[in-house]
Amino acid sequence: MKTQTPYSIMQSSSESQLRGARHLFSGLLAVIFSTLIIQSASAQLILNGNFESWGTTTGTPPSGIPTSWSSVGNTVPPYQTPGLLAGSTYSAFIRPNGTSNTVSQVLTSNTVKNFEISYTFAALDPGSTTQRSFNINLNQGTSGSNNSFLNLRTVRGSSAGVLSLESYNGSSWVTLGSNIFSASVYNSVSNTFTTLNAYNVTLSLDLAAVTPTYSITYGLVGSGTTTLSGLTAFYFVPTGASFYSVSLQGGGSSAGYAVDNISIVPEPSTLALLGAGIILVTCISRNRTRCFASKQQGQI
Image (cartoon, rainbow, N blue to C red; front, side, top):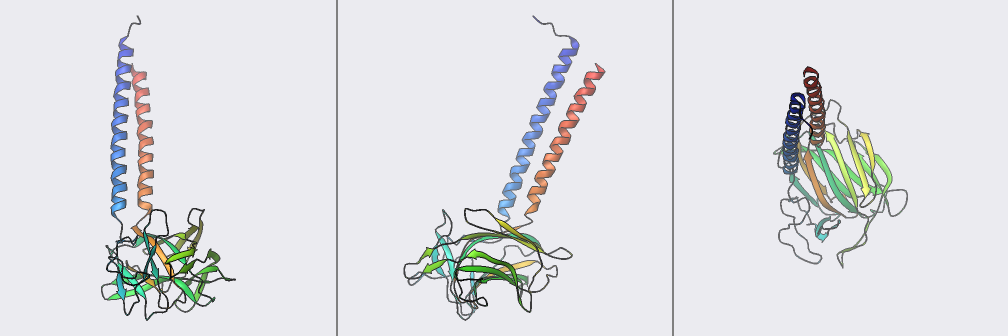
């Protein structure tokens, strides 16, 4: 039987204490990280962005106003169309050529300046390079004052069935991406897309920046993504006011479009930064415990 020396006993005890401290610290980090994830999920700034809940619908195809969304002016209600993603029951099809044909929603918090908005959309071909289908507005302001600072639309690209993305700069439309989307085809009789090209889009923007810019990441559902970065084409340059509401426009459109799964989250980079901080603290802690163990061994 191997005889334990005082040194080996003390070393074993020290190592056991260090292992226990590391396990405890790892457990605390797991709790903190889980809490951050929950808080991030609860920070969602839009309600019923997946359009699964609707008020009263009438007609064929069924039309109405999605729950938590509001109609603007003499809006022709959107169609309740099939979902654009696996697991999604409904999407909202914004109909073109109405008096305004706009549905909008005020965010649950009006103090957001750094945010990320994601959505899935499928747009029809508007038939012209100067006519639009998809059209989304992001608005600043407060109650009673609602100004669009970012106005995005899709137009026909260089050929039929291909769409380009544009942003209005206050005096003209600026092309952000040429021929980057394929158009979908919608049959209102059967309320189905006979050709569905649905795209995931994520827009990131910081209104608090000295010189605001934004980026747009897009990709066909189930495929890779492309990012357009350093974009500066605003309806008006944001003044630092908060993001107030989002609007889905159809009044100026020559063709309709469907939207699904809209998500708006504040400060999307915060969780990643905190996660990186946790990893850094963990590494520092482990280095310190190793150093502490080395010093103890040197003192015995």
